[in-house]
Amino acid sequence: MNIGIIGLGLMGGSLGLALKKLPKKYTIMGYDHNKQHKKDALKLELIDKLATDFDEIKRCDVIVLTIPVDAIIKTSQTLQDVPSECTIIDFGSSKERIDAGIPPSIRQNFVTAHPMTGTEKFGPSAAIEGLYTDKVMVLCNQEKSGENQKDTALEIFKDIEAKVVFMGAKEHDRHAAFISHMPHAVSYSIANSVMKQEDPTSITALAGGGFKSMSRIAKSSPNMWEDIFRQNKSNLLESIKAFNKEMKLCQTMIENEEWDKLHQWMADANKLHDIL
Image (cartoon, rainbow, N blue to C red; front, side, top):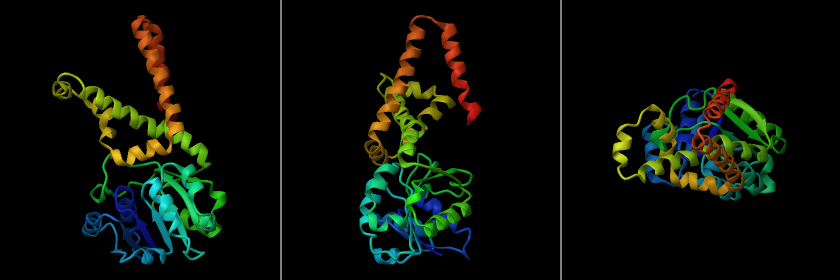
């Protein structure tokens, strides 16, 4: 099976590594606008070969789009002449916009997915083996995909050992705002709060594991996360308002020295890990 991966950063590169573990089954072709990414992907052996042009990618059995949402929508317009049996999988983080932006003529070719995994690093050098192992792969609006395309995608996801979950695009975007997008906004806020102190170096010198864990994802790509925040704006704002409500409640209990209430509030939060 010839797999064409468009976008050779963390997600695309890690997918290449996972599929290259089955060399008798998959041949991995890569495509990226960034010339350095192309060189790095080959050097790091994330792919088997580079596409000489975009038409070569369109002749692949499977095309995987591991690029930002706006780029996925734009690229989908150029894929309208792919063969009817071609499977196109996107890994975009905001599914409603993608679902609405795919040309109707090739909607059955698409399997819209979102792997709930990643790191704060980016580029080909960030690719790691096992990124998708035992991680949730959300498939959205799968009733719009062709049977062959669904079967092909599920086979690939099984081979990379991902856990498949089915969900509507609207539902996905709301959940993603709370469990992924809002936490990134919080991490950026924590980092900026510290950096705006009179002597941030003294504060960071005292930083322990808790601070490093909370601020780690503030190292994520601003280019990528600006896009995500814009694309999922309404759901993100709802999640930020919910977070601010809890922060205000915490502030009020501390101001009023309501220590018993604060203790119970913390204990309620502990219950989250009973379901994770």
